[in-house]
Length: 85
Image (cartoon, rainbow, N blue to C red; front, side, top):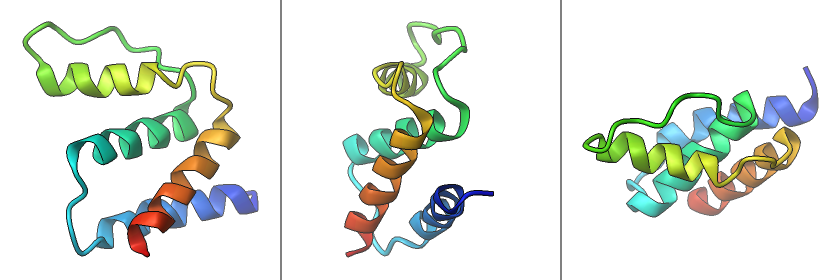
């Protein structure tokens, strides 16, 4: 396992310990960056029209399509560090 992957996993654990819940936009960024960093480009079908939360998550992740996994991991780590500061 690379150092980047270890930092990414540590950031994923650290984000669970945030004292305050981030706003919805930040939560979507965290979700999308985590998914792009861990799985790569989205392959799932788009959720139904009335699945508002699922659609928001899908669209946030889809916006990162083509972003290299390493870059997404770094951006996720940076965002978690900002939230912890």
